[in-house]
Length: 497
Image 1 (cartoon, one colour):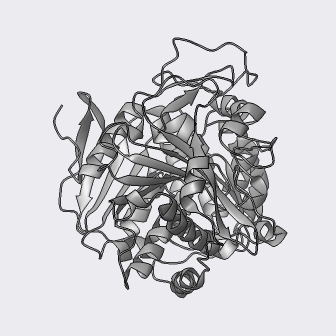
Image 2: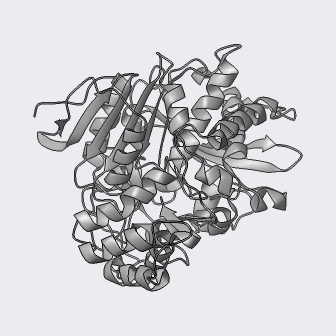
């Protein structure tokens, strides 16, 4: 995706490679500092404690509604028209759900109804990563009904929008992300996975009171990058509550280029770089020998070596090595009438930032305290994020979810991403000790090879997306649409053109 906010990707990558003070850049350049890391296996006691705390916290979270008339609030949330949008046939909503009254913690959502069969189509929650990166990026740059023109003021249609197949709910989480806010400063000083999972569950419960027709509807959770933490943990939280009564009809999760396990990321990150001729064998072997440990071993200056790696690859788009970087981030005040989603816009992040910081746009989306400074990513959340939570492996949760026969678990990877690369995910899958039930085969979209796929025992499927980067729906919207469709149908990916 290039660079976001005040953090350059090259600086972030340097810190990413230097494990004595590792900072990881993932979806929308989330910045996450991890000190004193230790390598752990899939079944470590730290992971077990992490899961137990999530269960305990989510069950004890308050669900009071403070006497809010949800139906009246729903009417107020209806978005009549977004500035600069093309004509559409579906309804869209935007507004807040308070997840903690005493803390003044409210999460912003944007919801688009399905274009067809909205009364029977499933409900899908989409979460972007970070931590602290807005899911409105997913809505207006990836899988939603609109993309943002280069003027930063007008929108154009995404013909591969996922709301052609489902009702899509985009949530800005946790508080401090995008338009979501809290009146309690400690919420921003001590953020983490466990509170996020609890808040997201409370959000869903209250949102379903506001939109009761979706109670009992087939429900899916999807996301990318650090949502590799958000999605499985929310799914687990839902299942804990469903033990008494099935309130949310969870049927599956879908996560792309996900952050799942530290050990896998350590093993696979540099391997991807050297395999794609972005890193020399000499540099790779030197780093592995001297710096791939905490503390570093050997006599090589790891800071100097990491800076060399930074210089070698810092000028490419690390989110997709096949695409250009943004050279002119300034909006040009002219919409491109012939723009299509199949034409990658290297400066798309800057355009969406300009769009959401217009007062007119914020008023139409029912944002409080207008004007509001919207940022694609809140880097402070990333820096303050719980190191224990960030380092916890999500592989045990995936294994736990696979025990539920009614759930499907799909993971996909854009194969030109360096941030959470295909080699990283391959290592994570290997650590899960999965049992393959199909061969590794190419799958097809619109007559062309979309990627490769393999299915495993436990209703678990893995798929690659050929030529896609970190945000698969951004780079390959047509192929991502095919993958999403087959996921909802619970059908194998097409194995013939």
